[in-house]
Image (cartoon, rainbow, N blue to C red; front, side):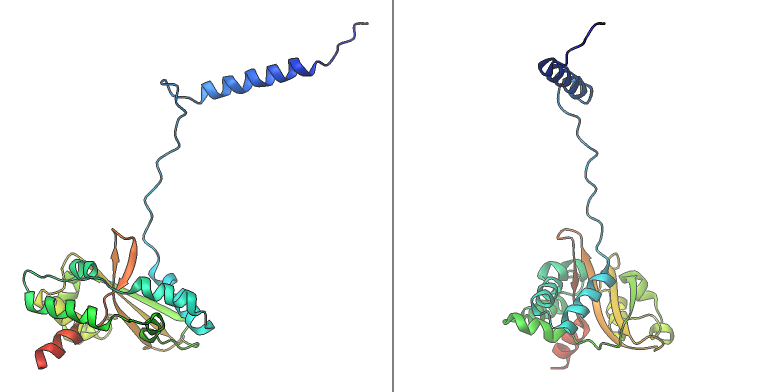
Length: 210
């Protein structure tokens, strides 16, 4: 009877050789390891989920999270450039630009004053339209479209860019037809974030009425 001995050194050599062959099999012709498929660009964040998180943080008293989310939503001059036309409405554009800087909170806690929520308003309704679509809405049906009348007016005037998509977020008590609405939001692809431009029609009207 022939007895076979288990040689640890031989076994380790075979394992190393096997792993080396596997590595060669996974390499490209240049000897470099083949890379995985390119990473997909980050998809647009769900606006309803984002606002739901903000509502939860505010109601739970989680000021740190609430302020962080609210600050991220605050508009910048880049937001204005994506949403509104400076070439066709230079005066109104300047008015809104100054308004954004004037209302920007200087104290972090003041960001929370922009958002007020009720605990029973658990239903979140999102409305989205391009500036072109907003401009086409006639007054009789405007109330059911989820935007303030001022948004339709600015779109019809050409101040809101026709190619930009605008959104509103409304928090309702289930079964109610109206609730607390926040608008207007746009998605900034460059910064991969939502921004709430706010009631810009108010800024234009206030300046005009002076």
